[in-house]
Image 1: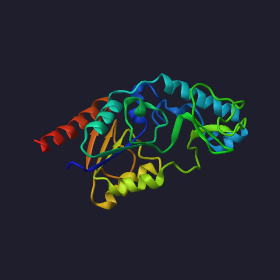
Image 2 (image 1 turned 180 degrees about the vertical axis):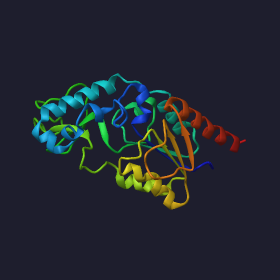
Image 3 (image 1 turned 45 degrees about the horizontal axis):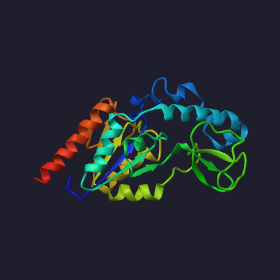
Image 4 (image 1 turned 90 degrees about the vertical axis):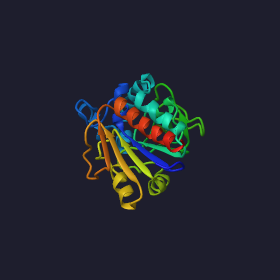
Length: 241
């Protein structure tokens, strides 16, 4: 890596698992415990708003109790110390990257600690439970607030900016993702098609996607992410003498 280059990092549920937050597709994950098609669609919210709100209240409470782990902290350290641009695209809806200190952060699937008004579009930070009796802080409408989460059938956030980052990056790192959820599952292949960037996978085990990576490290995120970040920063220091 030369100084001034751009690193783009994609993170998934695997990076937060060691902070105590459930993944989706692993054994015992959310997919096994809940029918997310009954909880994570606009149609489900219209039909059973109290049930959907309670589900996200439960997840918000769990996220509020969680603490960033060594992997989150390592990425924040990389962003701070690297002589270039570091952007983190996360599929996660928790706030652990922010809590660790990351700032160049793009939540493509939304955030648990925010609610969005379906009347005026206002997005508001939210702590604690949400109910149908809550009033929008912007427009005052009651009963129109929904979790600021990308549900099935909805477009992920920040896609134009993400496509630009993928086209301009010199190093793409995928961390803790299953490789099955699109469009994120296609990011590595998109980078490879550009022919200019190295691709790296840091995961508990090989992802299920069809995109081969130039470099792979497998193991717990709290071990392999700090190790790889240390390698990058050591290389950076050596280049500067």
